[in-house]
Each structure stands twice: as structure tokens, then as C-alpha cells.
Image (cartoon, rainbow, N blue to C red; front, side, top):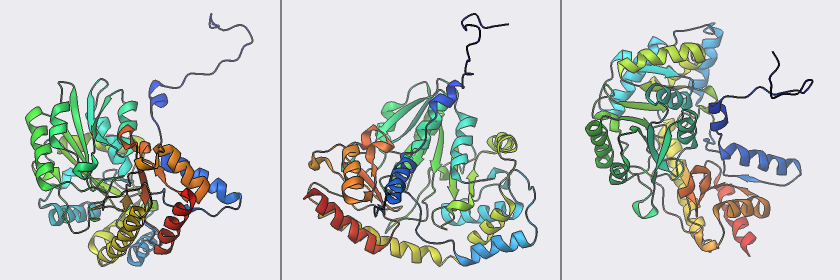
Length: 398
């Protein structure tokens, strides 16, 4: 039967879902595309926009993956993950977080992002409220929007070293609040929350019967400070979820490997999500993950020593630019300078640096409205590039 609103012979387009229209991507990849287009035009661009370590995957980990392929470890495996890797994750969490999760709490995933997506799918209903940091990782808001939930933003203030304040969370809790998302060390600011702050958030969740998802993808990437988790309070058995992965501190971004520690009742649901969405995480990638967790760990302190040198160099350089001020980040590999005194908006300044200085960076507003007045620099690059970028920026403003 012809649609009464469509004239005969007229073509129509089937409507996409409401959720598909609400989900959104990341500015980092948009800026990367612009930078690459300028490079195709023959311009030299220094890249500070993508959050990826500039090191290669350690050789012992790469060889473990290669050997797994040679041993024909290329078939389906249990959707929840290989037993060997799940046991290695148990040991890792006990060593780094101070509690040992039950085996049924450990879920292996193809990268940390599916962990964000699937955990929110199991927790959040349309109309719920989700509290998260701003500026913050865009995926939290994107998935909240997709699910028909309301994102409730907690501003990260420079005067508080960009740490999420538990009192600000408390002020935003309503009878519709379902989930608090925590990210420490944090993207984009490089802030690291204190143990007392994270304990307070876990206590708030218990008091108000809420879930906490703790994104700890930079857990091994701190400078002169410890890493703490809000999941220690209930050992992820009741209302907290720990997300971590191998991308950042093992330089395995392309391997797509992560893990979740969740309440066992959630793990049962997550297993069905994985079966329906991805079947399983690649077997040979998981074998590489076992080597990453159980093999030589000297790569990480060596990498962090290099990152600390780069951090100090870029922070000092940014502070030498007129109109820029930059705090020293305590984790990850991001600098988040204040550029308000330049008289430009974040987007205007980022565009100025890209087109006039050949330096690709991200506007703070790529991470939410409270990012206005800031830029994000990923200093996962060479010291030479850092020095060159600072000189180009200074020259562009002259």
C-alpha cells in the first residue's frame, strides 16, 4: 500500500533510528583528517591531536601474538575471554588494586570502549541521569545520548587541578541518577584523583544506590603519585565496574584488548552482549595480553620516564608562550593549557595553530562545554617535535 504522504513515483528514504541520530564521534579523528589533508597539500604538520603512545608494542608481547597465530590460535574462543587471560587479570587486579576479583567477575573485551558501551547498556535506561566529568572523554556523553539518558556534567576546575569534586557530584544527584562515571588519570586534563576523593564517590554511590563505572585506562601512567580505584570499596561485587586495557601503557592501541571487573550478575548479561555484538575478542590478541601482564614489565617505567621528560618540556614551553598558562599534569600524556589570555576561543586557537603554525591540537570544547578556554596537547611525540611546536606557536602569534 502506497504511503498516503508520498506522491506516486516519488522516492523516499527509510528513517534511521533515533539512537543513531544521537550518537556522535570524536573530534580527534576530525582534526587528524584536516591535518592529513594539509599534509597532502605539501604542508608539514606536527601532530599533537591523537592520544596514542609513540612507542611500538614491546617485542615480547608482539612475538607472543605472532606465535599464537603460528600455533593456529585463530578460532573462536569463549565470549567472556580466555581462561589464561582472565586468571592473569585476577592477579593483576590483586597486585595493583589490592583486592582479588572472583573469576566470574572478569570479562575480556576488544578494547576499553566496548567496556564503556556495554556497561552503560546494562545499567542505563532512557530517562536516567548519568553524571560524568566535563571536560571529559566524549564517549560517555555519546553513549548517554544514544541511550536516551540525560548527561549531567561535573565541571573540572583548574583551581582544583582539574580533579572531579565529590561535593559537586553530591549536589547533582537526583532521584533519576543511575550512574557516576569516573576517569582517573583523566583525559583530557591529565589530572589524578586522590584516594579520599574516590572513596567519597564510592560512598555516595552506596548511599544513593547508584552504579560507578571507573575508566582506568591510564592506571599505570602516573607521575610521582599513586593510582587509586573507587572499586576497592565493594571489590566490584555490588555496584562498581572497573575498566582497563592494554592500549596505552603497553602501546597496544591497534590490538584492541581490554578487561572489565564487574558484579557477577552483570557479567552474565555482558556475556550475551558480547555474543551478540562481537562473538569474542581475537584469540591471538588475548595470548599477547597474557604475555603483557605476566612478562617483563620494565617497558612501563622506561616509557614513563620518557613521558615525564616530554611532559616537563611541553609544560615549560607552553608557559613560555604569551597568553598560555599550563598546569603540570600528574598522569596520562596530555597537557591542557589555558589560552583565555590569547583572546581567542578554543576552536579559534586550535584552527590558528593548525593553519598558521602547522601544529595539530584539539580545542578544549571537543571534550565538553567546560573545556572552553583550553587546548589539549597529546605529548606522545618526540622532544624535537615538542620544541619545534613551541617555536612555531610563538612565531604564529608574532
